[in-house]
Length: 331
Image 1 (spheres, helix red, strand yellow):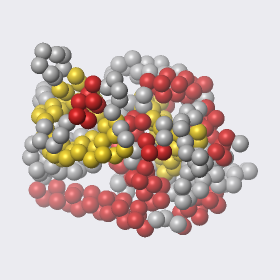
Image 2 (cartoon, one colour; image 1 turned 180 degrees about the vertical axis):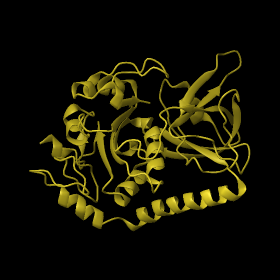
Image 3 (cartoon, helix red, strand yellow; image 1 turned 135 degrees about the vertical axis):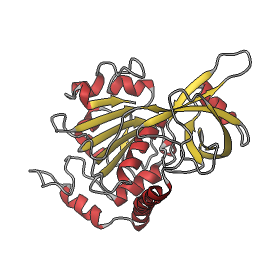
Image 4 (cartoon, one colour; image 1 turned 180 degrees about the horizontal axis):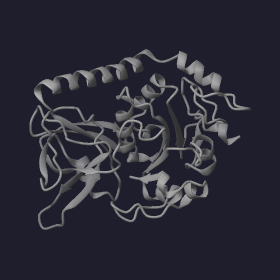
């Protein structure tokens, strides 16, 4: 059955998709995945545990230092600050059409000033032409000093992504922000679902990073991530670390349009059958479903936004499944 095909490839902790329960919840009648989640909890990967435990410890140390020396300076202040020119420090190739860009902040001891969730507006302008602007969500931590990191996929008709991919270290790009999106606080929702396609994963990663580095935040997270091929799955190692470190609270399901022969996960596009299997029920209390990706994904899953300040009406698969407009947020 389709539910079984949604188990993602090469996942060390196999999941049975026929139940929405976590290991910390009582088993429902007919459910068979409680034992699997319990076994998964016993097999937490040491590397993932060290990474995220260290992140939490670092956060505590940073707060202690801040209490003595005051909060770190912020590069982006919002409001009337205007655009800031940042120096491109380094470029790394991620895959066949995606690069990681590291931009130096104006001062080494500055943090970005980003909130969760928020984005930055980028701008460039060739002489005699209209400026090109495009929002991006950094993948670097909000507490990182001295630089920000962007992961950008190049699209054939994307003027900003093409411009970025043509840049070399030593060149500059204008940034402005932060652009506030969905304000997150610890335990704002009991369970959130993240439906993403392509580079729409970056605001989802920003949310996940904030949740799991905060020891006081107990939110459960389910990620459904659609891509063309396996090499297009961005930040997969980071999500695997989360899944191994927090098996009772984080699950990731990958869907490929052009999977390899050995792929045992979901194939095609993110569809109603998969979402009915893995999402929290619409009638569940205090849940939120976040959507981010290309226009086709919005149209199929939730309907498009009207503008950055107008979420528009809910449509698509989520409406068919019974979710309300208030239960869904479109990045």
